[in-house]
Image (cartoon, rainbow, N blue to C red):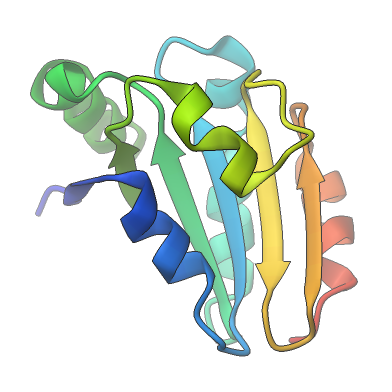
Length: 143
């Protein structure tokens, strides 16, 4: 079965990340055309697999155009065998929502946000992360 890719607007994503839950969300903003993004995706898959029994949720948020969903994004996800949840953020104008996510983010990809609302922890990375860097970042969060 092919992985479902949901197309969402920013308020929907924001609402999800604002839930008062003890789940730690690892949210990676990426795109099929971004080479460093594609390179680091296996690290997020490893992280998901390694933490499958814990309260850790990996969200891969594609910044590809919604028009590319069937042509590019779905085939990419299938070809790579991504098992993490994949969303496509359908927001053509980043200026309308980026500051609400993180005021320091320049818009460069990849961008990763790790957040736990219960413990009030939040960390962001505007760079490609190695699997070791990802694991180290997550270790600071409750399991």
